Structure formats: structure tokens, C-alpha cells
Length: 370
Image 1 (spheres, helix red, strand yellow):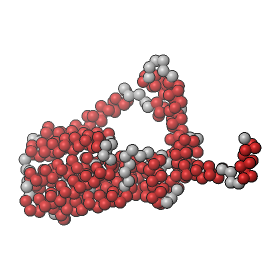
Image 2 (cartoon, helix red, strand yellow):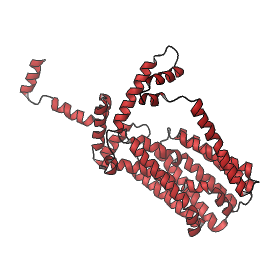
Image 3 (cartoon, rainbow, N blue to C red):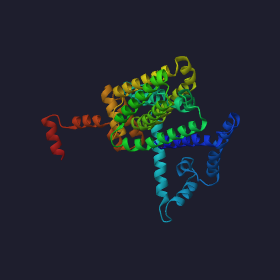
Image 4 (tube, helix red, strand yellow):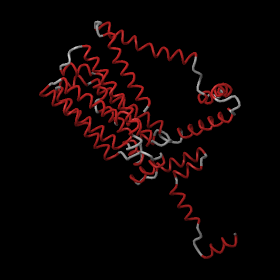
């Protein structure tokens, strides 16, 4: 996803910032790096305050239609009918609001089998992204390199920059592969690559303790992560959660993702010291295998499938139509017959069958009316 790509750009810039302070003492270096982190956010705040206009959608949602028209006129040609655009925006706001309030939190807190299966998949993938240890390893790369025998400060920084650029490059590769070979194959390639690299890294710390092997394993681990688990964890929830629960379900998935990342990062050093580095990397390799089994058992292929297709899939696999009924009810609330037809196709077929003449008298009656 774009957010994942941008975040990794920031990580690379952070690694590069180390070059400016590698000769400084530790107290000056970390303060200087924090200071550099203030620059871009400050520029963006100034641009948002004095240059960037408010979103027409936000203005319309607040009833400030005249201001929304003014912003739209800056975007569209002079003779364009911005009133029609504003009307569409307000209609979309109404539909989105209806969808958001179509079901309450009880659907997620006390889910039916279809919703439960869907939540297990979406939240499970979000947790899997962090439980493989990516944030912990990224945050403590310098510690790992130091333990592997890389002692020179400049060498560490150059290795960090190289690893960051490699990880960033594979995100671009993943963006093309996800739409060509599908989601599931890339997840398996990603987790398989991470498991193998962590297993070799564990063996290296146990016996050889070679800096070259450690660097190659870290490069393989980060590349494997970026080609599947990295961007894919945000792609899957967006492709399976229907409109009626999307906002709530995505918030839970994101929350669990960040909680898992925080726990992994905050316990990384203490766990590694307690288990040894070799033991900890072996544990992460086992976790990667477990995540691969979870994805094999629960995650369907979502490539080329609409939200309605995914809702039907979860309804069929659990023999639970509640997810289709919720979608149909949402469509009725919005007054969109086409969407209702997508969700409630089986009920439509039943109604059509019941509407057919069932006896010779009914057939004759229909012919008389015609």
C-alpha cells in the first residue's frame, strides 16, 4: 500500500540521518536526529494551514456548501457544473453514514459464524504482520549487527541504508506481483523466505557468528517481508470487510496490529537475552511457519473478487447468511436496489420462484389478466 511505502521511505531517511551524526557523541546524536524529524512535519503543518484548502467532502459534511463549491471551482474547469459534483459528494456522504450506522458494535463483539470467520481472517493477518518480529528487528538492527561482529559505526550505517533501500525496492516489486500472481502465493513466499532466513541466522549466531552471513540473512528477511507480509496485511482487511463493518473492523485490526508490534519491540532485547540470540531467531522462524499454516487454513484468495463475492464466500463456508442479510439491509437503508441485488441474490431467486403460477387455475388467471 502507499502508506506502507511512504513509511519505509521514512525509515530509509532515518538511517541516512545517521551519517550526519556518526562522529557525534551519543547524547548529541539522538537529539540531532530528533531535531531533523521536526523539519518535514513542520513544513507539512505550515502547508496545511496556509496553502492546502479544506477537503470539499469535509466541508459538505459540515454543511458549508458555498466553501465546498469554491474549492471545487479551483479543481475543475471554469464551465464545469460543480453543483452536480457537490450533489454526488453529499449523496456519497449519506450512503457512507448509512452504511456505518447500519450495524452496531454487537455484530463484532458477539459475531455470527460468518462475521466471526471474517474477523479471524482480517485481524489474524494484521497480527501476523507484526508477530513475525519485523518492527523489533528493524528497531534493533544496530544491536543485531553489533552482536554479529560489525563494530565499525560507519559500516553499520551503510549496512542499514542498504537494507532499508532493499526493503523499499521489494515493496515496489510486491505492488506489481499482488495483482498478477495473487495474494496467497506471495504470503507463502514471504513467510517461507523469512522462516529460512531466520533459521540460518539462528544457526549462525549459535555456531559461526559470521557478520557476512548475518547481513545476508537480514537482507533476505527484510526483502521477504516486503514482498508479501508487509503490504499484504493492509490489503487483505480492505478486501474482505464489507461496508457495513469496514470502519469498525479496520479499527480493531489496526489496533491489534500496533499492540502486537509494541509488545514484540518492547520485549525484544529482554527475550533475546533470556533465550540467547540464536534461540530467539529460532522462535521467530517457528512463528513464521505457524502464520503460514494460519493463512493456508483460513485466508481465501481475494485477487479479482469484489466485496460481495467475499461476503458470499464467508456465508457459504460457514453456512450463515447473516452477513448477506446485513448487506441487504444496508442496501435498503441506502435505497440502492443494485447493491441489494448483489447481496440478496438468493432471496430474489426464492421470491421469483414463489411468484410463478403454481396451478392450472393460476396459469389461466394470469393469461386472462394479460
